[in-house]
Image (tube, rainbow, N blue to C red; front, side, top):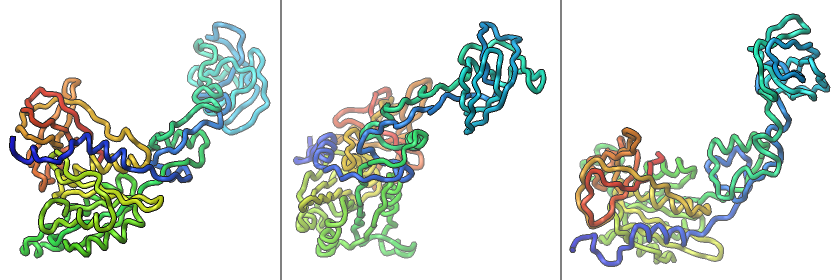
Length: 409
């Protein structure tokens, strides 16, 4: 079979993923205040230094009581005090006694039940009556029932999301050791970028790649320097020479194919980078380029993306995420789902990443294909919520099960 899918030297998508993960060297670690660790990856497991709750406490506003009787409906109790949340009390309850207590208040010694105020009739300032029976130890949060001192709270390599951050804060954790995030520079190559509508008359185009990459990296949690340079070999080489000492990753767009003005590969070699792979048997993004520069203990990687914006988007969602995760010790990066095609698709000799819309119907995850999948088109991203991997050399039909990843943003 002829065509670009049969071109020699192309590696598979899975080979490209594996090479990125195996080649990327994990970055060093740093200790940060908890509040600065959102979306960071833990460099060590976290063990609780406290019990949660740290003391037995009331789960409701009501009364802590002591009763030796089994049936408490219509039982009366003498009120001997009050306990607010955050206050100390040396009250010790005896049979038939009660203390007014509020949510979070420390359970006094001798408590057998907590009666929520909705089932309590106040007979007088010093006497209450229960209107229904309650079970022993009702509405008591016991010391250590959620977390016990010495229990593991978070695992090595765990990503700190909002929920994890809140849970660690509740356990009194103040700092975390996390993997450093990569320093990233983006290099947009090409002379065709339009600045104003008038520039379109000169056959230029508006830049989508710069804003796309800046937003993607910001969403990932990274700050980025973006440079625009002309398609001139000397400028490209000089740019790589400047960036390789100060950044962990250089992302380029355009200039990675075989045209007369595609200087990224030769200029990368001129700047001391060694190729890991070039060209992946996929659509879009076939001329994907990955290279490494090593000097002493510093490593810098070039992820050379094609110039077409859809290829940039797809490659960042797939290979960009795999690379940045690998630099932070993450080897299980992409989370694939399975879903059912609802449309027939065209045959192709290359594997494809297609932009689709996933939805549930009668408990089943289904996929709606979207038009305008060409690598220079982005408009279907208004509806897409996933990228779907379509195998090569088959005729995809409605009802076929395929794999995809949800688009984070």
